[in-house]
Figure (cartoon, one colour):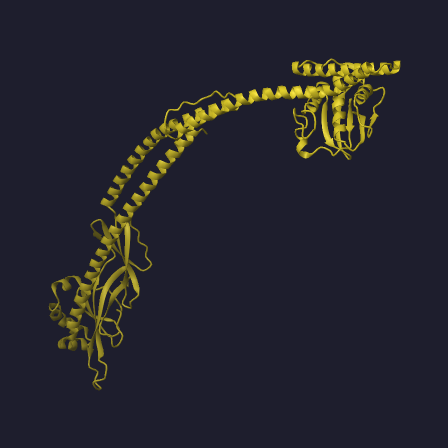
Length: 535
């Protein structure tokens, strides 16, 4: 995924999430506010209904106490005769208010709750009504019969039982007064009241608030539930959701526009920087960026241009210095490599000039030394020239032992250095004789230099597949770990007193051109250089 799309998705996601979260919070707040407002209204309705209950209870209780306190009522009730009580019912009914006569019922019962006569209203058919315990002045609460709920007030009709002032009054009858609440919901504006008995499940849409109905013993016998629908609050919430949706859509469009603008503002300079950095990685140091602003991106482009200019200048200076250093190193290397052959030529020529008489054998030996030294010098110079021009090697079938012995004879080794050559006489390989001899000369010269205390240098050939491996083993300190990685790189001298480190690099290049390889490792006594050649 490109950076442009990442920026777009980040902005789009952030704006969407922000507005979604804001809308959810506002909607949740609106719902909670509407719910709290409805609940407060419903609590007010419950309190109003409770006030109605209390007023009914007080009206029933007052009327019942009034009736039970009249002497003629006590006399009539004390007879326990239904006919006598019904005869006095008309007189008692006139003592009740119009509202109580129309809505409430009054029933006279014996002390055990069995109904005797009805004074007013239409009470439900009951074999026995609840009664009161001795000493209770009046008892009120809700009473359930089937699915019908009644608000009752039980008032005992008492007379003196005799036996002194401390004696408890005797209950001669029970006056039951009540209202029928019914089992149908009471409709209200925006909601309804629903009475339900204990254990009955009532469901309605909207917000619900319950009020338990206490029975005559104080335990709940039913529930008054009020259900209210949000009404206008729902419409306001729907309008709020539409507004939030419109704001979200506008925010999405704005986020798309802003994301593409910012992506272009940020990604295009970064893309140009990426292309310029790729050009620098490809060593095209002339690449520059346009500086179009003074912000962070503009300063970054200016810094990159300054860096590119510095790299270009430093590279040009490095190339110039490297060329000068390379010329100096090559000159020093050539001088070093030619020093030994020139010394042999100089020494032999000096003996020929200074000696008045020399034996023919001595003269021939000196001439041979001068010839061999001159030949080695020409071979060295030709090798350098061929390496510089990339000239291909010219191979001929050579005896490998003769090439190695020629390299050994060219070394002016101290007396305490011994050479051991273990190569078959008849081993022949296609070689560029002069260059391969130069390889062994370099390997032997390096071995002699690392053995100041003397020792043996062994040149051993062993078969390897279809070719041969020639190992040059010395008894020096071996190859250090930090040296091994760059041993065959040009100018890697690592503490040598003479030379600039071209010998091993040129030697390995020669072996590679012969189809083999030159490797180095540590043996049991010192370093081991292995020249792998193919037959």
